[in-house]
Length: 267
Length: 222
Image (tube, rainbow over all chains, first blue to last red; front, side, top):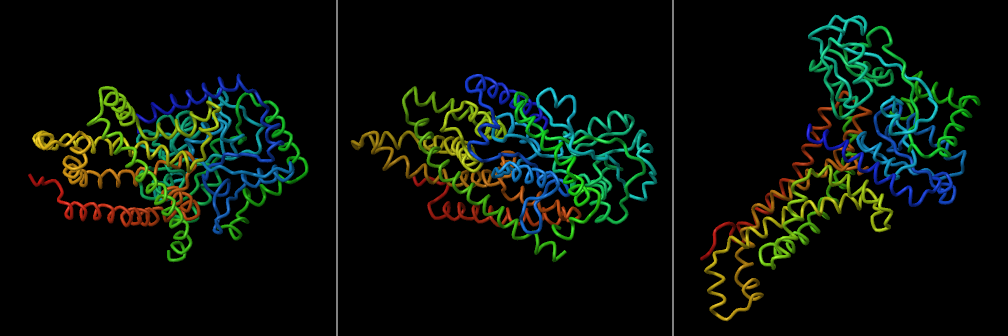
């Protein structure tokens, strides 16, 4: 895995480099291409409910997916959802397989060096979970020598643990939220850091698991696109502002994020 | 628990089917290309030996994950129409190339392993190069290719698990997606996935074992 981690950035930069050189040859506005072909290619990740997942009927849905569906409908375009692993998302958009990424990607400063981000769509709260018998009350209790904290590999929570809980030991897990929750339940780590959506899921299904007090931080979530696509950025921002003002986003958030109303329809 | 299995099983079967189709295509095309490359390595002229040698070493010396990244993400940036591949096409091509290098090494090693005396005897009987290869060397080396080939095929099947990075929904991907809805059943779901892989791989190994017995395996009838 170490070898791969060393090679992946290299491959990503080769992709980026080739992507840029080819652009200079055929600079074409992607929004123009979209309106010509009538298709919107969007890279998504199946990171889990309520953001993006496959429901009991085999339909791809979730908050991010429903926002994109609304965008396609409002623009009169056909939606082509491309499902990638987390590691495939950024290469997919840089190599032009997809027009933009609709995942729960935090617009960190490091990512913004390589990508363009839309205005934040909504803010997710980052929390910590642990088992009851560990005796933690708040995430502040985790910042101690000998406490291990699990997070999803290469997620923005890695830096968060390093910054906010420097004394604890960080453990990264591939395979998304479910493997991190499993690690907490089986005692492989003392606690985990994740967003509220995931945490609410896991405390429900694992007896004895709890959400610790206090929000660690609020994180903006935005869609990501290639750095040079200014028209696309305006096009996406325009839609986000639109649904923020006409109440559509509030309706979606109420259904997917601030309640578990979606569960009976999709779980 | 039962409800979870009922819900998850059809999705996993779909994933297994995708794994099956991609790996079978890769095994088929990989074996064809590999046999050709292996033959060129063992019996070709200086240039084919070097050229195919470079091909084999380049692919065997790089991780498969990097190869699929290059086929799917890097090649399309050349803007050539032929490289605008879908996930499925890219998966089959990358896995076939990967398979071909392993098959090529087995084929060329098996041809080299036939004792020199067999060649000389055939030539003494007036066989030309092609006849020597076709009637004398290949029938013997074919028996030696069988056992290692089974190992390579199983390796190829299991390597399909990496394909989700380019958007192929194979068995492991389907499992990860299903687990999102049943996070506490992660172990049960992966146990089922392991069973499914076993049900697919074990017959492949048995089949090569059977072929080995039927056609003689490693023992040369000299």
